View (spheres, rainbow, N blue to C red):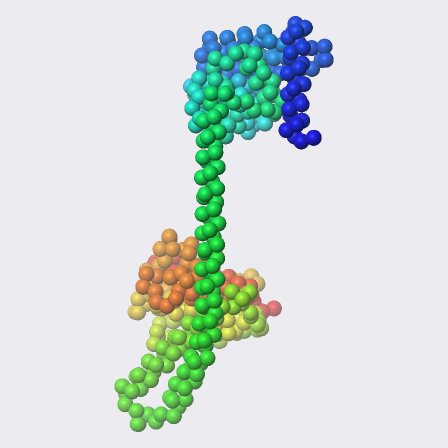
Length: 418
């Protein structure tokens, strides 16, 4: 037997009992010994609540255990009397019936609230039902019909007055239709985003692999050309062009490596090969490769005994991205400080700059894929996302904070070697 069928049977039994009591005139308790339904009547008009109490009190099976003049008094009375049903008015001073219903439904889930109001607007009916009311009747309802609704509410059934049932159902049907349309639109948007992400991932993977080989060859050719050229046979202008070509090729190589991380992540995760790594040596190698950005601006403080357990190539990629980012977004005459130290079980590298800092509203999305760290950012905006992905693969972390004197500090942490 379902819960609904059990509720219907309890309600039918209660109604038959009340009918039997009425015929027998046996007061509040029938021969079966069942307790009457305990009821609290709530209405701000004293004449109305007295009239309701008098009419209901004459019917067998109902016991009026309290009268309240507003919602606040009703809440207190329900907690004290523990009634089965509350007959609740809506428009009342201090606390209205909607708020009182919400409190009673939350605090006394075994007490049913039956709204009895002069207002039949469907919005009020829906609001009352959403607050937890078991039913909604209009004032002027016959006492016997009200008593029948009270018995039904005590048995777990709901009752809505006939004049307001149709507009309420129409309102609910409209709401369900809108909800279905919204859900359908959300599903279509999610599917479109998934298709877009898949195509984006396919493009990145293809571009990274197609670019990696020619860029590697270009860097090798430029390095060979630098070795073969004799300084006395090359003009300063030609040498500057060669240096500029090498610099841009290295920049393109770093971008390809970032794209490779995106491709690896799309294929199921970034691979790392951890081993013991001297942190001071890694930082020094990154600073020495800064070329035109200016290694002289970077102030390094790192003890030689700091040893991490991480992937040296991936760590170099992380430090390169963060240090170059600090140099790019800070004034050219200001230093960038790199401080490495030991924290419990980790090695931390802090990179602090004197730039304008990162606006608070951009902090949340700073490490998003294809995001941009600053208003004048160049490139595809995968650098900081790459940093986070690489560190997560190495069981490390990265955080960022605003400096009191301007600028930002990125804190990179990787596991310490044991």
